[in-house]
Image (cartoon, rainbow, N blue to C red; front, side):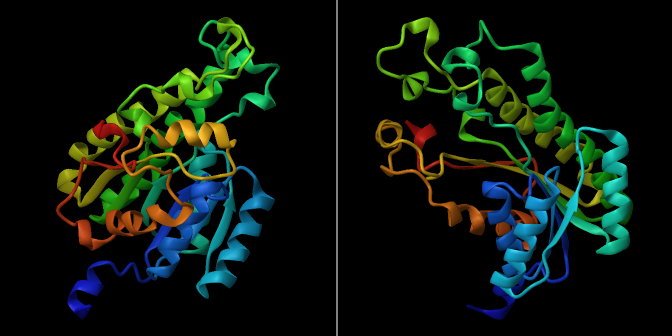
Length: 277
């Protein structure tokens, strides 16, 4: 590849904060950033898991990956995070708002917990606090610092379910009455749709300050789901399969690098074509 073209994707020395960094996709984003020369910082409320993943990725990529524990739902916590990261690692050039609650039905009192009629205000508030309030607070703190420096990138991790409603037939379990069938919770759609709105707002708000803001909307990822669920979902995807874990890495590097220098306020949909049907 031509050197000038390769340089467009080079993230050499750029510090990248990844919220929910110890999670399934958070570690994939971090690996991509590291391999492109950036310096990932895994921010997660689970301190031990974040450090364990940072150590693993450092060994895997041969590049430094850092971990920083913190609660992104608290203004004081985010301010402390920003101070710690800048002091220990350096000024943040990239923010990936990746953190989200995605509770599983089996972890709740019963399969009907997720149904709208039974969904608690406590769960609603907890999900929005992480997925939306956390993204707002991190954007406010890290994005403001970027704007003061005159450059930076924010990437919000949305979902194909920011564009379409969940097909609740995917989650049906045989033998259960309709009012007890598990469903994808309402908060997932609300949070992911809200992130796309936040993307457009921030992109235009800081357009004249050198801060680009985009979203990526991934589809489902293979992660040991039940075979019947996978089979149902694959029939809704033109490419006929779910995504592999590493298939969003190239898009993340593109959106965080100078390769997308003329792109802001956009939502890059990578769902195997599901929303095209």
